[in-house]
Length: 510
Ligand code: DCT
Ligand code: MG
Image 1: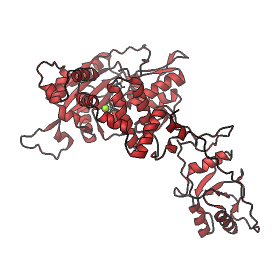
Image 2: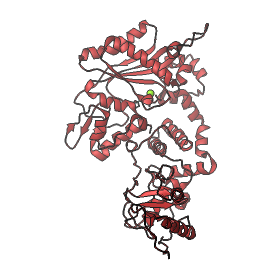
Image 3: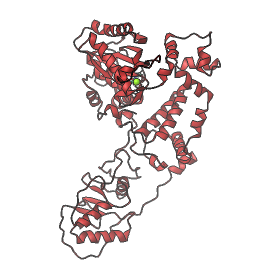
Image 4: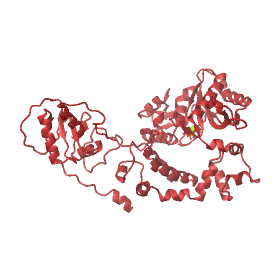
């Protein structure tokens, strides 16, 4: 066993069992009978607890010596909501959802007011809902209050862009990328899942104790987390960042049209810079790569939301010129609320048009842009969609819808109308745009698939397969037990078919 690991999974400190301190106190009239208080001794101490109990009773509050079913309010000092829940678990007591967990500041305000004051957020002890206290050995009741395990599937977690564990997730994403470059699929998945679960946490990991109960964090991952906690950085990540192969692949794949195969070839040929590659007469480039080099600077500088909105206008103008009733949704990262992206993705669909009209749409749109001088690159892929085909088993398979991969010329003025074109300067920016056209009755599946994130999509499919015996992809959902396709008009219906709580697009940034 890894010595580090052993250090973290050792026996937990036994907490002394709390027994209510028996007080000798004169009887007081209870004035606020519907409140039954219990004051936690832990971290408060016997004397202070006894003092507060006596004071509260004198003011007409009912305060119990022992924790019992009748208690409605637990008051604690210097404890978090999770601390209190953990304490309750040790007592083998089931916390009901009507039990209030309050900070001592509430009680003190009540004492000042001589009556119960309103409980607000500042008084209520926060329970990290996704963060269960680690289970104790032996039979136990599960507290019904708020304790829910973090799922191993990203589609059962809410992941906003509010990532409070960047320091760790950046590290794991670099390690994952390095594995991708080395085609080490299993390590890639390990690191991506670790990054993904950390992104969903509503708190920052500050000690190894915080990682208890979190899935997808294996031994290796935990060692890296520990090193980052202790040193602020990971030696393994530093080694990757200084690795020649990683640096070269990172550079080469930043060119549109260059994937792992080409990068491998160039790396083996001894290339280390893009300038050397561009000027080498013996190399042959695809049409995509030529465009990639030509518009390199624009394409590596990310697309802003303002630019994405301007592209959206362009797309709507062109599509509606031919199909006024078409639905156009911006998908991808921008639909998830991101402020920047590497491209802008759109899903287009329309009810009540013939297959032929729909098939012609992208062709017409592209030739319109070509006439207007806005088309810098296009690659149109015809649909290979078949209605009765079962969803793909592969989690990363491309879908069969008709689509085009484009580079469009976006004039600065369309983004910022105040911006007057500078004399002689370039007045536009090259932007990567993807357009996908899907059959109207498949729009919910296509929208769900094209909204991402990739990790979220992978886990949705994995969840469907392993937990529901269903098959999901960008086209359809198939129930293997019932042997039927499950129809859906909206993303909500797909989640419902899968028995999942609905996760909003901005919560899918896994
Ligand atoms: N997608 C898919 N099948 C693929 C590739 C992508 O279903 N083979 C989905 C998942 C995400 C979405 O399409 C958009 O893809 P990207 O543009 O690559 O991702 P993004 O989340 O929009 O990220 P970025 O902000 O970098 O564009
Ligand atoms: Mg995108």
